[in-house]
Image 1: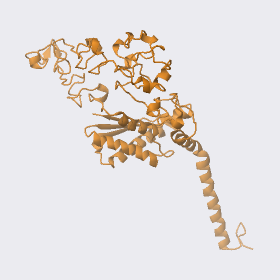
Image 2: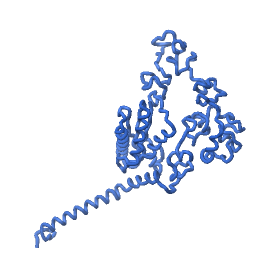
Image 3: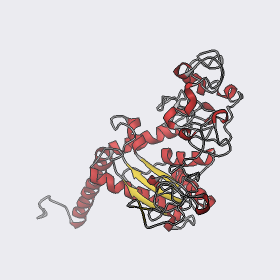
Image 4: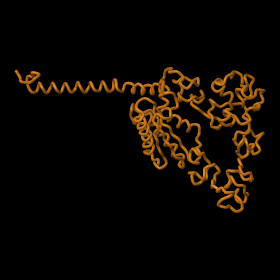
Amino acid sequence: MSNSLLNFKDKKDRNDFFIALLVILFFGWLLYFFGFHRSDDFKLFEDEVEIAGSTIDTGDSDNDGILNSKDECPFEPGLALANGCPQDADGDGVDDFYDRCPNTRGNQRNEGCPESRDKDLDGDGFVGADDLCPDIAGSDNGCPAKAATKNEKITADKAAILTQPVIADKDGDGVADAEDKCPQLAGIAANSGCPSDRDKDGVYDKDDKCPNVKGTAANNGCPAVVEKEIVGKPVVADKDGDGVPDADDKCPNRAGPASSNGCPEVKMTTEEKKVVADAISKVVFLPSSANLTEYSKGLVIKISALMKKYPDAKLKISGHTDSLGQEGDNLTLSKNRAETCLNLIAKQGIDRDRMSFEGFGESKPVAANTTKEGRQKNRRVEFELFY
């Protein structure tokens, strides 16, 4: 009999036993790690794939009347004519799904209608909230026949509605030409359709190098002699009149909001906006990693094509996660995923100096983390092009 504690017949018998034990322990660890520890993570990944590419009825996540299985943008309300994706026919920054005046350029404050929306724009006798189609004449709540509700108006009858006359607004400033004192020059409603002129010197702010100090046209809106201080206040240079001082303005010759450091947004076509929207809503990573799926790589590479088309544009990439897991881990994961997208775009020949990335973890959700659909929306990478 062997002296071994387990009574092995020989050395080979003993070695075979320990090798078999190690194999059992290894596969036991794999079963635990992937079957229990990561089971929820894999389920989340499967949820993403199911919703993004399902061919069966998976509901209507964005409540736009188009089933997820037929909706190319299942988490963004859109129109049937755009395959369920957002579109903005009049280019006023308000998606047609939410735009009460989809064919007349307006503003967000008035739900896509011009300042005069409380008037009878289309002459159908319906005014204000009583007119579901403020810019299209109709007898059914102010809409053409069979468009009695807002949802019907923007889906089934959209094609017929688009054939109706559009209220004239040559400069696209949201003020109808009939009421616009500067119909050829984009302005603001508060100035009857003319550009702003804060100092009332006859030089519009966009051309006024001293928009807060009354001057003359000969001096580009500045006084004859520009002192370092006027009435105790320094004159701040702002060539483009966008309210961002030239010292802080990354685009001093192009007007833009302070939120983008004085730079304007990139004006893209509807198809190009869809490329960005698809990347934001459909890019998927492998579970708990910063590795893109092959399908998602194609979506990100399309962003590089836009960067080549707009060589002066810059790109900001922001990573986000849902609230599952540790907050610190989510922050790191979001940064890594945003950086992965940047690296892939850089490989397509885009200068890294034109791009930046940042991770926000779970701090900026766009939907509730209590539902499967909400968590899928929150696990995203956002792409923003700007000058």
